[in-house]
Figure 1 (cartoon, rainbow, N blue to C red):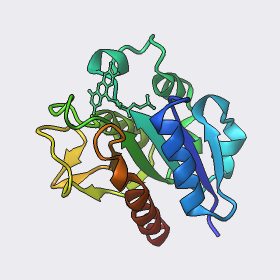
Figure 2 (cartoon, rainbow, N blue to C red):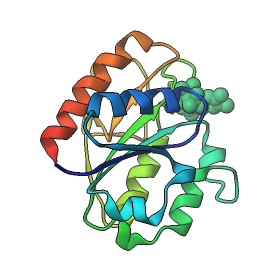
Figure 3 (tube, protein in one colour):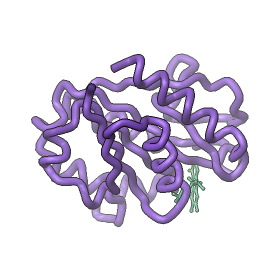
Figure 4 (cartoon, helix red, strand yellow):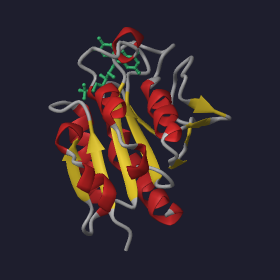
Length: 171
Ligand SMILES: Cc1cc2nc3c(=O)[nH]c(=O)nc-3n(C[C@H](O)[C@H](O)[C@H](O)COP(=O)(O)O)c2cc1C
C-alpha cells in the first residue's frame, strides 16, 4: 500500500475540516498533518501527497514574505523530497463572492509542486459549479478538487469520497 500524506494550510477553518474528511475517506494508514508540522522525514516517507489550500486573494498568495505558509513551505523545500512523487490538490473557495477567482490558489500550488518534479493527479470536472473564471481550470477540469463550503456545502462529502476513490485508482 502506498503511503499517503495529507497536509493542509490554513488551520482552524474549512480547509482543516475538509482535510479531516479526506483523511477519513482514505482510511488505512494515511498520515494527516498541518503543513506547519510536517518534517522532511514525513515528505521522504510519503509516496503520494495530498495538499489542501484555500484562496484568499491574489495579494496574499503573491506576497512571499506574508503569512502564507505554502509560500514558506516552497521557499524552504528540498525539491528531492518531492521529485517524481504524485501530488493531488484540493482547494476551498467561494464561487459566488469570488466568481472571477474561484479556487485560483490551486493553480499556484500545482505550479510550485511541478517545479519540484511532482506529477499532479486528481483533476476534477467543472460540471456542477457556477463561477466565471478560475486560474485553476485547464481544459474543462480543475487541477484538483474544488470545494465550496460557503455555497455548496451539501456536495462536499460526496465530492471528497468520489475524488478520493479517483486518487486511489490513479496511484
Ligand atoms: C478576504 C477573503 C478573500 C477571499 N478570496 C477568495 C478568492 O479569491 N477566491 C475564492 O474562490 N475564494 C475566496 N475566498 C473564500 C475562501 O477561500 C473560502 O471561504 C474558504 O472556505 C476559506 O477557507 P478557510 O476557512 O480554511 O480559511 C476569500 C475569503 C476571504 C475571507
